[in-house]
Length: 251
Image (cartoon, rainbow, N blue to C red; front, side, top):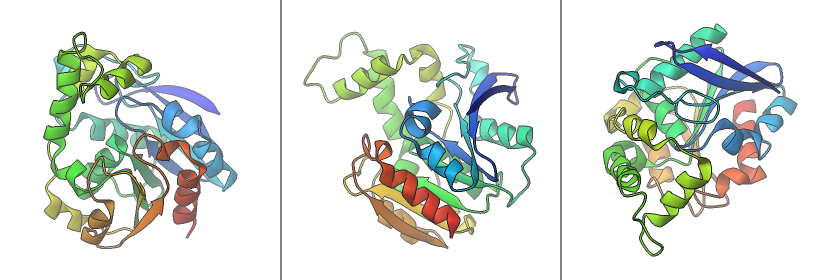
């Protein structure tokens, strides 16, 4: 595996990790996670590489090995979509010449990019995402902003305590994270009609964190729902997820 850095659209230094050779697959991780935590640690990137793909695993800004600037100007609306676009440009990827996979925040970012005509992958895999997670991002972001704002006073028994524990375990830069949470709008579900390439909606059978994944699949023009085991926290740790991604991209 190779780790590289590149300058995004605003010169922020972003890291990506690549493994394998073949058709590129850009993989986008979840909120307050990283390429290592979602794709590398559990072998999903290696599984893609073994299947003949080049797994390209981005660390979003504020995550992993990428920079976490504190300047509010570094967080314009849609900043993560712009970062993924900058990565595709850096790699010289052509429309239809790559696949795109996202989990949770990564899935939301991928949907925004494709529905708005910014990226055109050959195939799209949306993991750990449902209708509510797209249409009600501001509500979900408000939950995490409360966790950040009240970080030192949240106690066990508070519904926000699990999220606080996760942020602490990941060493999240809370100043930068607070800025990032305001940089994405709720998604207009009517724009799903613009996602015309084959799409796999892959979700754990106990994962309702972002609403209904089967309902999301039903709203897309050319999608199928693919169920794996697990909830929002542990489905990404299981080999089933990587196998489902490989199977979908290989058909």
